[in-house]
Image 1 (tube, one colour):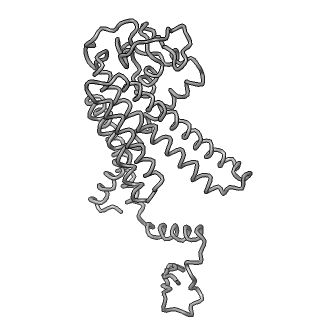
Image 2 (cartoon, helix red, strand yellow; image 1 turned 180 degrees about the vertical axis):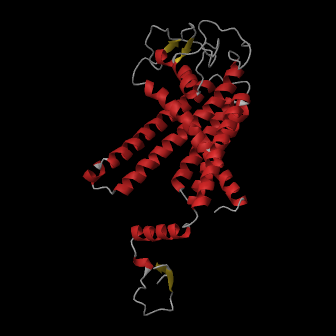
Image 3 (tube, helix red, strand yellow; image 1 turned 90 degrees about the vertical axis):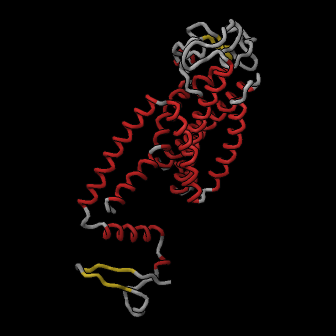
Length: 332
């Protein structure tokens, strides 16, 4: 089907429509390659925005000012009201990507999102029940620690594929660059997104469980006295001595001399983002706690996820707000 297009020659626009059947310049748009179609759309966009430099500069200025103001507001909100900030951010993280992926019909993401939501909803329900079942803390921390490690592995795999594609290693396996790049970016997105979302849910569950157990209080003194052989995270006895090698898990002793189950303290510090002792609130030295160099990237990965939370949760909202300002001011 022949398309209708306009060509500007020497400042004069010539309209080539369907009625000019014998025009030599007419051609079938459907026969163009994707690259040629992209170039045609790109040329049309440049022609449409030609002469609007002042308007574009004003729009860029609005964007920069809005980003700065939004960053200041978010920082103040997080410092003054951290609980409400974390809840709203968690909701944003959960809903914003769902809206865009539904709109774009990304069914694979929607399937994984649904599975993650069902399992995490069940885990969160268990974590917020009172009285707390004795097996719940271990279940919660094992699930989120597993999710954290899976997201970490997927993110590293995606990043590696992207780098291999940039260096042309994909050509050795006869894989098209666009296919390899799409696959790598998709894996990177999956790893980072579920890594951030899992850590936020883990932090919420950690607060509920620790306050229910009674050995931790966000403000003030704990409601229970901690015995030497009790883990303050889950409230269960410690059966393996610090100097012994456990069959399933080891026992960790912090610098404050309080001891914890391995899964509990790992989930508390790395996944739950609590870098302090659950009982006495002394700051935990993660580098000393995880002396193995292969474990330290997990700590850095957790810090990266904290930064990406702003990008995923709040950046689309800020961009939408900027577009609203441009619409009100009549800027296009």
